[in-house]
Length: 114
Image 1 (cartoon, rainbow, N blue to C red):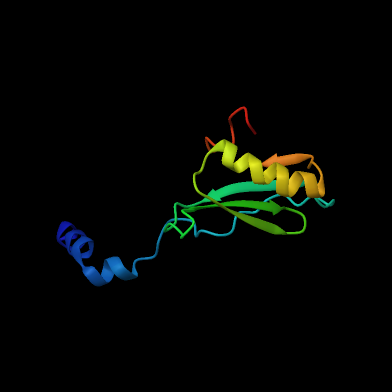
Image 2: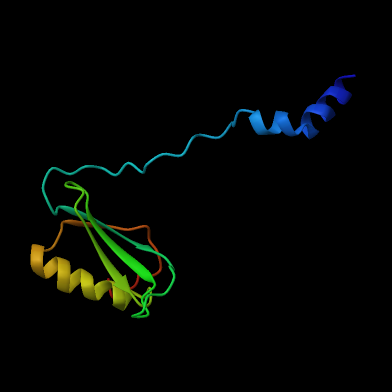
C-alpha cells in the first residue's frame, strides 16, 4: 500500500504543483560595500539582445559598488577590446582609476587587454 501511495503522489499534478521547493530561494547578489566612491567598480555584459538599427546587441555595465551609480554602454560585439574602450575613455579618464575592478571572470574580462 505504501508503494501505491508513493506512486500516486509522484504522478499527481496537484501534488507536484503545490509541493514546497527544497531549493534555497534566489535573491539579489550581495556585493561588499566599500566606503569610498570609485574604490571598487563592478563590470558585466548583458546580451545578446535584439540588434538595434546601429547593429548593437550587447550592453556593457559599469557599477560603482559604494554609490550604486551605473553607466551602460551599447556594444556591437562582446569582445575585450570593445569593453576596454568605454571603460578607459568614459570611466577611467573621467573619474580616475578604481582600487578594485570586479567581474564574473568572463572571457572578455580575463584577457591581457583588461
